[in-house]
Image (cartoon, rainbow, N blue to C red; front, side, top):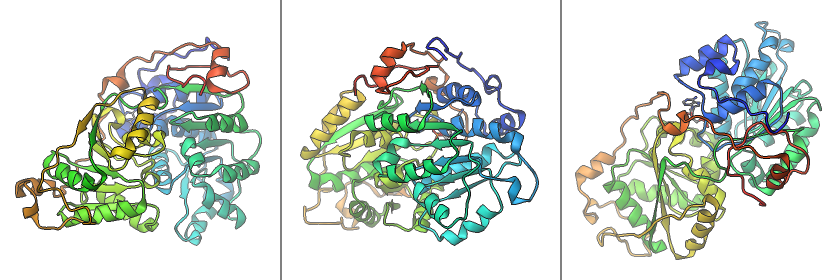
Length: 471
Ligand code: AMP
């Protein structure tokens, strides 16, 4: 493949070359047109090529790999109940349990008109509950790396027939220190296989990983890496650290917010803050790594069902959460890694919807904010927070009192904030960003080499601008 192999943009799923049972499942979900990453990645993956795909969260990247995988496995689909007829043929590695659950759910949705079977395995739950399911035989396994290796050690699965490997959110896998596990897993797989790698950001480490495990990859990028969605309005409020809790409460009670994820840097802050908000009468819960898997799933389900209006989360726990129509995220603390900001605010404005991302910034976090602005190539407008005197708590107060008289906000506003079941809409994206024709930027292989740092000739199928040059 050469640099001039630019594939036309697909206006509809019918033109992507997908088999009828998959098209039917897509129609059932209500998707009208493929998202840009789907339009680019699906035909290439169907050709059996290795992909290095740069796609932000919320761009539809799960279907971009799930649909071609299912199509490639269709010839092997069997209705037999014999486990031998259902060896693991596709392995999808993801960084977190929540993402693992979501990705596997997507496979089930897209595979519903086929006999292909999928399973998810992740840590934090009794391994023995997963083994019987593995033994029945499944074609697609979605796994977190650690638990996959546990199963390998216990000889409860066999990876000898894997034909397709996906590394989803590869950047986060590296951030979470999964590199040694990934190397061990790669060594267990057949050498001849197709590899699909998805990452929201392209750091030097990601490029090295791509070098290690992809063969002549096609680079596909549909939104600027490290870019934030234009349909997310970003606001920054400056204040003292000690005023953040009061300001957040004021914001939540006053603003017309339906549901929000509030990000903190630490698990302790997440727990404390959710308790403090509860005392203010706000339906909040925390989701972080110290919570059991059961607690995390319960909190997430409650949030999705609208029983909780504020989910306080750390970065690791929130990674990959797909909550449709989430209108707002709030950065209670600014992440020191600027990429995390991109991931956090990618929780809103998904699938073409619009969203708001609010950051509460204290003096020592200004430096982190400057790094974020550099990364996203945008200057954010900063406003001094106007904190109502009655909202302000003495600094030593770990949690605000539950006395509503402490607030100037009315009970009516407080009422408004009591959770109501969310209306789940699976309506197709109507945002012009999704519907706009694909405009590839053609690069020659030399400039691509410099940009990606991959020291060999990459066949380039399609590339939209925005790779960080020389980084
Ligand atoms: P993902 O980036 O895979 O996490 O997907 C983000 C959201 O986009 C999910 O809620 C998907 O159901 C939704 N989605 C995926 N593909 C499409 C599409 N072609 N049209 C509308 N929504 C989609």
